[in-house]
Amino acid sequence: NAGVMQNPRHLVRRRGQEARLRCSPMKGHSHVYWYRQLPEEGLKFMVYLQKENIIDESGMPKERFSAEFPKEGPSILRIQQVVRGDSAAYFCAARPSHSGNTIYFGEGSWLTVV
Amino acid sequence: AQSVSQHNHHVILSEAASLELGCNYSYGGTVNLFWYVQYPGQHLQLLLKYFSGDPLVKGIKGFEAEFIKSKFSFNLRKPSVQWSDTAEYCCAVSHSGNTGKLIFGQGTTLQVKP
Image (tube, rainbow over all chains, first blue to last red; front, side, top):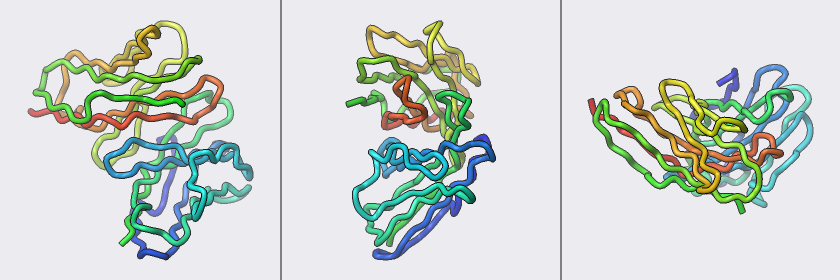
């Protein structure tokens, strides 16, 4: 997984709470992607970030979801006021600038909303 | 819009059987093609990829895939499966100029019986 660390691996939240998912790529991997996998579905692109910038957020729901990748620290996917439909696996992927189109995935964070 | 279709959602084979998993994509431009595998409890791993050149691509663990441009297909094959190949297999495509933004198929669960 080229050192892409995600935490927490499993997160349980009640409806209305906030969920924060973290992704720490290897040093030098400045391009980060977030994907979501709903039950029985394939992975869906959410957002592409490059240190401090959102490059493409075409897959992000319009409300309650946000993402950041600050200069220091991990990338954060934040879901406010979670609903049951947010229950899914959230995968982070990363690559360095020079690796072309090959990205490496983390192990995923499983969010369960009860 | 780009889309990826995997024909089989769940495949069950006996050890030593041959495997072919179908993948078709919908996109008119130049694409990069990928197969990822996710073993139970593990992260997504890259099996093989096609960017250009020889349309028959060899990957890890004896897998190969053939890019047939006229059919918009990138089927995955393995002549003789093992029990350890039990996993989820995901086909993905990206635009050649769109680094890392992958469109995934819905995935195929392969179960190999010993």
